[in-house]
Length: 81
Image (cartoon, rainbow, N blue to C red; front, side, top):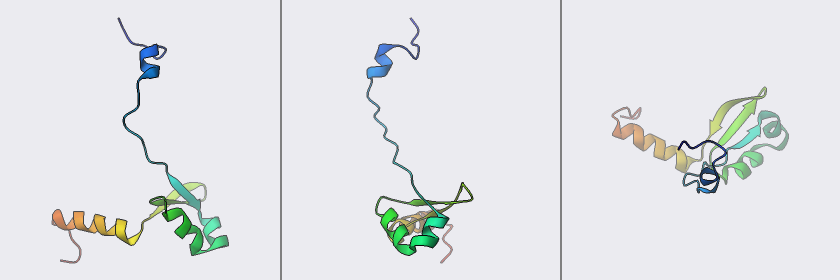
C-alpha cells in the first residue's frame, strides 16, 4: 500500500513542527511611520525589511542579537576577541 496525498491518514496527522510567522515590514512603511513601526513589529520576533519588493534586511532586538554573538564566541569566531 502506498500513501498518496489524498490519503485520509495524511490529512488527519498533526503537524508537530510549527513554523514561526515571518514578520515583515516595507522600507516605505519605515520611512512613513519611523522607528515606532519597527518597534511594534519586533514584539513578534525578528523583522524582515522589504525593499523593492524583495527581502533585503533582518532586524533583531539587542537580546536576540546577543544570542548570535555568544554563538560566534563559542565557535571561536568572536569579532570582539
